[in-house]
Length: 216
Image (tube, rainbow, N blue to C red; front, side):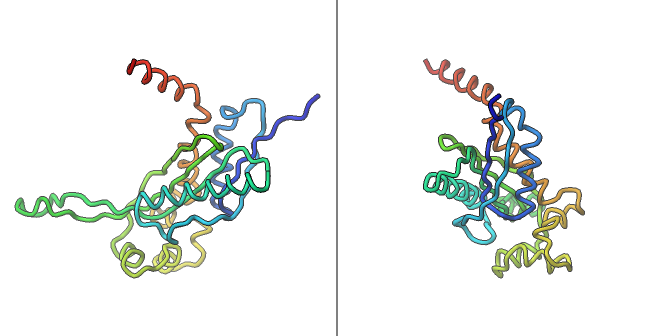
């Protein structure tokens, strides 16, 4: 009897919340991804290529993708046998909206809201896809420390919550949501979303075929 195949999923981080998030995500869709194989998650610290606290959605996406691409390059050099490459990035997204509470003459003046988001990028060496958690709005005072004073989010949230090491525990997500949503859970959702085109490949291929057919 031949040995069961193992799908190895490399994650561009050695931090426990991220690795646990990927493991939990894979547990939920593993049978869809590889019905006849088991899945193994390995963590390797790689650079993100972005700032310590990304402050735009574009930077978050770039950081996640660069981590995955760094893993792919490492595997190509060293032939580690990885099948999927996962980059995770958390940070802030600044959104401007019309200030509807102002006078009508000031309706076009934007107000600024800052959200905490968690992003994932998953590649298999040929294709790659993004996934994102939800978003939670952060207090203005916390946003000021990170965006205006340049304080790293993990340091600012420790000070904000009066605790130490929050980054590797519930994270800013847990502090802001009273532990209803942890950092690990936010990344888990992002990973499930990013893997969807792989474990739900038939649907994505069908939709592409339909789109191509409509253009004939």
